[in-house]
Amino acid sequence: WVQLVEYGGGSVQAGGSLRLSCAASGSTFSTYSMAWFRQFQGKEREGVALIDSYGSTRHADSVKGRFTVSRDNAKNILYLQMNNLKPEDTAMYYCAAKSRRWFGSLSPNEYDYWGQGTRVTVSS
Picture 1: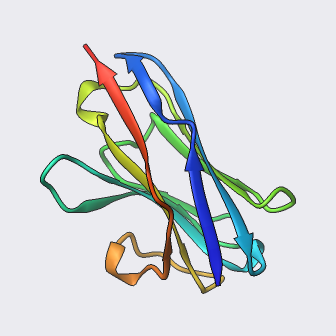
Picture 2 (picture 1 turned 135 degrees about the vertical axis):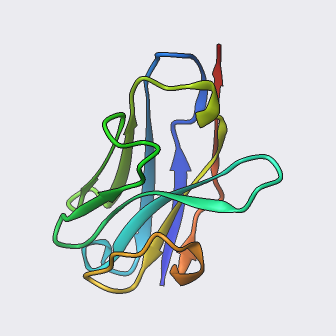
C-alpha cells in the first residue's frame, strides 16, 4: 500500500518550465515502479513517463526531449521536470505506482495506486 500526493502544478507561459513532485508514504517507495499520467479535458488518461525501481525510464513521444522523470528514493519523491511547455500540455497530471520493481507499461489500467492530481495550465 502506498499513498501519493502530487504538488508543483500551476500556470505558466508557453516556453516556461515547471517541476512536479509526488510524495509517497506507506510501503517502501524504492520497490515500486512509478509513472506520470495526464488527462486532458474530456479525454482518457495518457501516459507521460515512467521510472522503474532500477532507474530505467521511458517517456512518451509527445514529451521526449522536454520532460524528464526522476526519483529520489531517500526522500520518497517522484519528479517530473517539464521544460519548453506548450499550451497542449495543459492537463491534470497524476502520479501512479505499480507494485513491481521492473515495469515498462504506460497503460493507466495497470497501475495500482494513484494520487489526486495537480493541474498544469500553459498559456500562449
